[in-house]
Length: 207
Image (tube, rainbow, N blue to C red; front, top):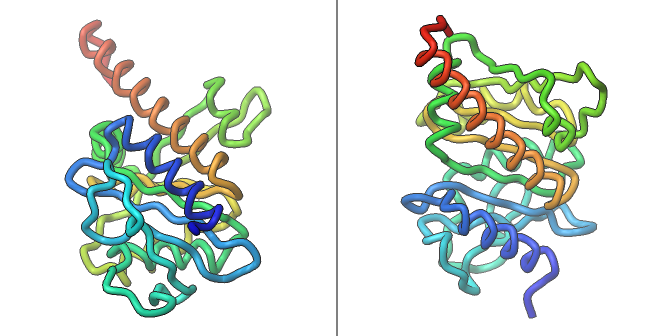
């Protein structure tokens, strides 16, 4: 029988697949097993738009599979281990969309993108009227240990978000629902900003 964590992650994967956020088998998702240091993570090379009993693999905090398996964990498992080691987060979502890639390129040289005065920022747990959401943007190192090392300084709380330049977005939260809310809010803000920039170009305004 599949565990409740497995089932929850499968439901999240199905929702994100409906949005077509897993192009070319991209992306990776994970969820921590209750009262354990182990977590389920998407198996490498799977078509995440399909649901099977081999979608996820159980790994420990080093990223090594727990028990015998022919499956390989996601190539970016080290980013997940970094978050689970340093925080009380219980779910991590990483997707590649056109919008988050374009945003990471537009603001990559600045090293971050900041959003203010948006109602949807509340979905990230920021409730004050003048709250802002600052999303760091890091270089897309092909060497995963180096990518994890660059990623690590931005893992400072139980919830968070990081953009990897021309790669994708990684969000985490204390529950699957919280992580999904943060992801949806960020993707909304990216689409908003890109549309706003287009309108400024049409109006002849310098961005």
